[in-house]
Figure 1 (tube, rainbow, N blue to C red):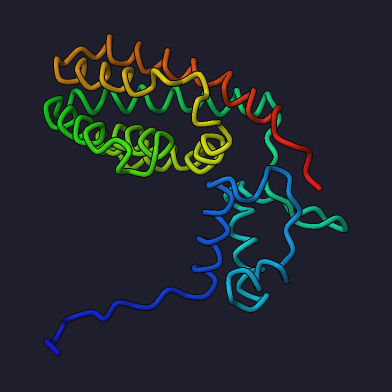
Figure 2: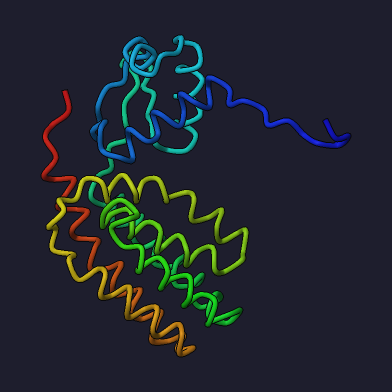
Length: 218
């Protein structure tokens, strides 16, 4: 082995459990407010209860899990006002990132956004395309603080997306993304940010409707 070559360290069982539980929440397999059993999760993911317990504590710090003394552990369950706050926060961070990304390199941003749109359903459906497109805007800002701020809500946004039906009334999403990419390519910061802002506001009510439509957790 060449001196200085680093061996890839295997993922810890806690990391594996954490990502598995995270994916089940953001993918919609575990409903909002669903009670989580350490034993059931350990059996489901093929690990012991200890890494599951540690994973749940970490997910609690990220806001995806709530641990209530004497009651149990639950998937986060956003109220309508919390969904609206997430969307307001998202609007502020994403439009700031978009403006910065256009200022830094409009042509490169437009290329990345168009590549995302060209991949379309190959990304795994409309919800996956939406996540990748908006993530590309954040990455395009090349600002670690904006990216870190966005991560506070990124998983919750993905969890909300997963609760939307495929024909959710946001079918113009792809067209809106195409418009944003074109405005970015033209260096139109104001037009691109206004379109993005309107786009986020148009999805807000869909998210609210989705949480109200979800069956009560048992």
